[in-house]
Image 1 (tube, rainbow over the protein chains, first blue to last red):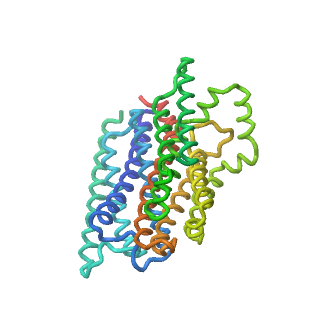
Image 2 (cartoon, chains in turn red, orange):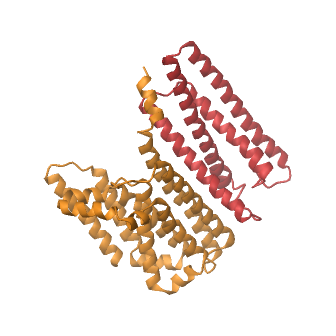
Length: 155
Length: 250
């Protein structure tokens, strides 16, 4: 009984923090690269109505992920049900996951916008995706440790 | 002072009298509700006062700020303060029965349904900004006044339909309300981007449209995200997923 509860709590903690990580990275990208550095713009010069609508969708998704993840984690804290060690793992997995998704799918496959509008774009793309991969790998390592700790001490 | 100032100041006074009435009977009513209702009512009275409306008439950024405060932020305060629950505690029972009868009417249920409320709220913005209605409004004072009323009332209706605390019989499910809110947020954000890119309303200088729609995109979405927070928070307290772990734990 206790083991399955511990597993469920760790899954819920992981879910909540992955959602928070995804939303946070999206918000960080938006604040740093859009608002502060101005590398991409509110709308790009040759946009389409559909690309703009997908911007609206992604911005909404970012806020909703933050809200849902935040409410879930708040509830887990209130009930003292959160699993130790899983929070940072989930958060990093979410952040790295978003960064890679943004770098590969949004920038390269769909091509909504680029990291920066310069000649040596490859460097920027590499920095973007490698940093995403590092965050993701760090998250995987933390998750492995948290799982090992839970297995050793199931309560 | 105009009709907005008069009516919303009166509403704030009435709310205060209601709270005073309850306190005198020894009943509790949270202070924060009185505070947010008063602030929200005053905010509407101020942003829809003649000098600010005059400014908003000539500057699209001011128009957008007025619209955001009167139609999105203030309704949060007005609705989350549970004014109907307060009123029902203060009036004779017969009025309460009338209210129950009224909200059970099919047409009231239809108008206060989340999807209808979204169409009245965000749908009306599409009509106002993407057609020539904005230019027409600038020349027609009765239309301008009517639109201000429309956005305050539609904002309250939307807030109440999605996550209002006041009692309502047979509410649509949380899933439907959450989905509707998500769709409304996407529609609102997309409208802001379209207006920015396609230069709508075209009678407004491009620079003003761009700055106004950025406000609409960021601030508007934040107020709706707060609504999502209220709805999720209420739902998660009864969520079977977490309640189950609660029973079996420790």
